[in-house]
Length: 240
Ligand SMILES: [Zn+2]
View (cartoon, rainbow, N blue to C red):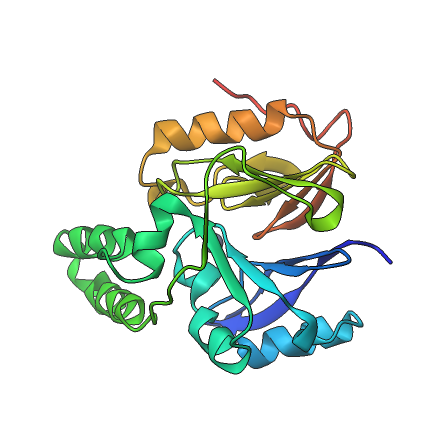
């Protein structure tokens, strides 16, 4: 069985259909879910996991790449229904996921709201509201850059700050592949920075993207954009 399984969660967002791509890392002792979707996404997530032939009851861990609501919004539901699942996150982001510190995304959104033109204010207010509703969850396992696990044949934590300070990506040794989180997304068959206006530190975000590209993985699994298989054409992005 393939030990890296990308999920395709399709959903309506405003008037569009969107897709997010959590990943399952499967090994003898562990089934690790990487990121889990927006609040109220548990049933979508379970359906997609089952569709891929995997029993959601077999999940042992969920790793959160960073504390944005599209990556950890469903975490409290997941943990409530499957209390044995251990939550893994970077040491830096743990404080935000557990609610010990105020969400940096909410702070940013509140700042932006002050200067939003009148016609966008309602959207800004609703965005802040939705961030306030994200339920905090305690972290069981805190990780740092370089930490190594035997998931899916060997998995190393890569610190990729910028989008958020505690953002992490994962390097999978056996297949020379990377799970990027939001450190890289796919646009026009290239790896680029996710919504640069959301990056809390754009310079660090560019550095992290450069780091992931220079690792020359054969496959990049992006939460937004799906799977990118390296070829001569697609990987050479202009990185400063
Ligand atoms: Zn995201």
